[in-house]
Image 1: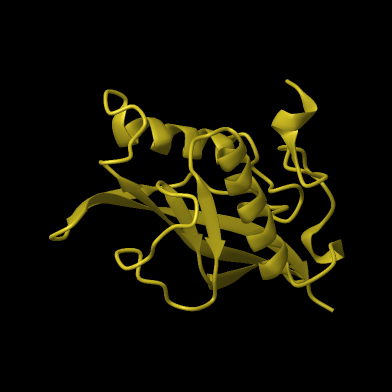
Image 2 (image 1 turned 30 degrees about the vertical axis):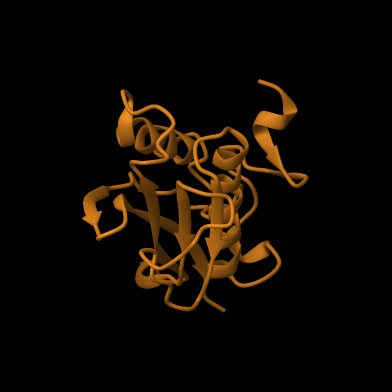
Length: 172
């Protein structure tokens, strides 16, 4: 595997254990989101998707005109749950729903269909199960829900991938 396959913007997104999540700079949630975006950008480099939008504001994918065309991904804010692992460790689960929007009209290989994009997406995160240490307690298997969306002017398929990254926080 070449270096271009394992890095993006000088940051590695390999599946190693990395450093504890709270040692990384920034908040745990932001570190996880950054690594999710880096992994999605690897899919851009591989030609699987065309662009990634990181937002904390609501976006209507039906109304969006993607700058680089379809398919594109949107990463929003997390839902966070927690449970104590032991008296000094809180295991937090940060769930980021990633919406991927695919246009049938611009689908590069209609024989392989959306399933090929979903498999490439899942493979990317299965091979990067700690998000470079941001998710030091692992990324859980990712469920995907797909739905067709049609308007008067376009036929889209949207799928939501629920990325649930777990991180350990040492209580102080």
